[in-house]
Image (cartoon, rainbow, N blue to C red; front, side, top):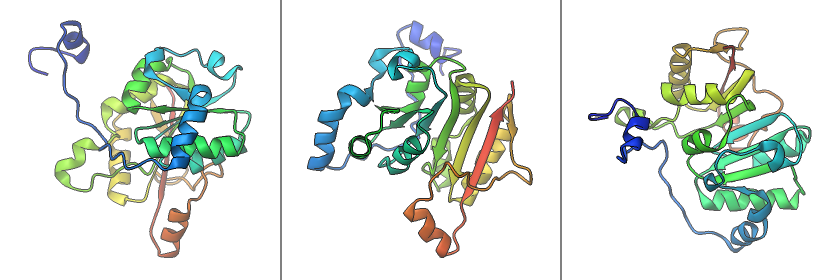
Amino acid sequence: MTRFNSEEEARAAGVYISKVKSFVKREGRLTNAQAKALTDNWPTMGLSTDMGKLDLNDVFGRNAPRVVEIGFGMGKSLVEMAKNAPEKDFIGIEVHKPGVGACLGEAAEQAIENLRVFEHDAVEVLDTCLDNESIERLQLFFPDPWHKTRHHKRRIVQPAFVQSIRAKLKIGGEFHMATDWEPYAEHMINVMEASDGFENTAENNHFVPRPDYRPLTKFEARGQRLGHGVWDIIYKRVS
């Protein structure tokens, strides 16, 4: 970080420090339905980092357990989870606009009221918008594994990211990861085992069966029929 000891120190000096991104933003073209869903539903379901630190009780109009999902893709599973758990509030974070549009359209069609979404970098959302100890569960399902060794630094599960999640989780809150790439599962375990404040919830080795609340996607079901593995990993914040 050159002459600065921290990002905060650099920012205070007016110097921008370039960060390694865990994603490549491939926008693609919005369908007419996705564009309409964004226009119609963003005012009531969209959140922005410009809002600063959020009062989630005010955002949702109630006090309830909160679940955050990073990288929800097209949002179908996230909407299903919100529908199946109306007693919880869900916040989805995704950088790709077509996915955000698809999620909003699905949520509107299902008349989901306990879901809000960001179209933004999750690291910045966690830092800027969410209070510490405000989240019951943080979900990271099938993130980009960045297969090539030279790209491993782009994997989102890194020590600093884990500690930012730790700060946002309540004591007893869970960080739930899932991947269909075994080397990435091993990487996740290695990072988590070296991180303070977390305890693996698995009864045997490091993995847990897929919880009922995580929907089985068509892609995942097809992979299982072909003999492909999926690894669910859940760590609980203990300090």
